[in-house]
Length: 251
Ligand code: PEP
Image 1 (cartoon, rainbow, N blue to C red):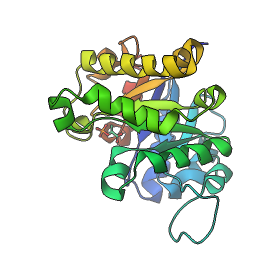
Image 2 (cartoon, rainbow, N blue to C red):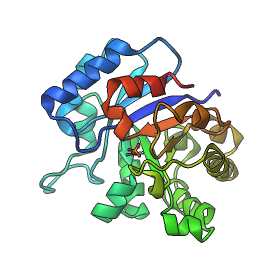
Image 3 (tube, protein in one colour):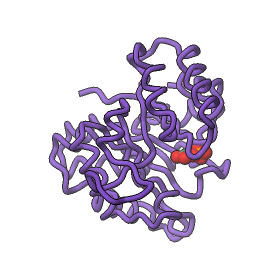
Image 4 (cartoon, rainbow, N blue to C red):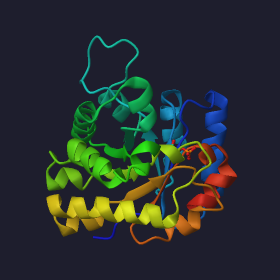
C-alpha cells in the first residue's frame, strides 16, 4: 500500500474565533489539487466550524490537538474522543512534546489516549522526539525507539495502520533550528525499521512518518524529498496560509 504524503498544521493555542475561520478559509481557497493530504490542527473552538468549511474538499482533514483518555465523566475542562468525533474531527495530535513537558504526559498515558482515539474511529498523529541533551549524548535513536515501543507496540496491525507518526526533535520545535534532511531521514528510517520488526513490512511501508521542527517554505522541499519523510507537522508556519500552502506544495 502507498503511504500518504501529509502536510499537517498545528496551530497550538493561537487564533481567536474569527482568525481561525479566516485561516481555514484561506487554506481552502489557496489549495492546489494534488494527492497531498492537508490537515488543520486547530483549537477546540474552531472544530465544528472548520469541519463545515472543509466539508466539500476531499484532501483537507481536521485534527484536534489533544483528547482525554476516559470516555466521559467528572474531568472539568477536558474534552473526550466522542466530543471530537461529533465535531467532525479526523485526526488527533497526541504526545506532542509541549504536552509532555508542560502537562507531564508520559507514554503510558499517551498510549491510552491513542486507544480511545482509535476506538472512536479517528486517527492519532503520535509525536515522538528527543531533547537536545539526548541527541548530544548520541542516545536519540534509543530514546525515540523507547517512545515508539511504549506508545504503539500494544496495537494490532490494523490499529497501527491508522496511526501517523510525527518525529519532532524537541530542540527543533519553535526554535528556528531544523534537523538536517540527513538527520531526519536517519531517524525516520530507524522508526520505520522498528515498525517493520513489530508489525511487518506492509504496515511499516504504509505508515506516514512526518517530520516536525521549524518546517518552513524554504526547507520543506529538501526535508520532504527524503525517502522516509512523508511530510511535515508544522507549527509556526501553519499560521500563515501562504506559508502553509507553499509547504503543502513542496512534495
Ligand atoms: C509543532 O508544533 O509540532 C512544531 C513542529 O512547531 P514549529 O513548526 O513551530 O517548530
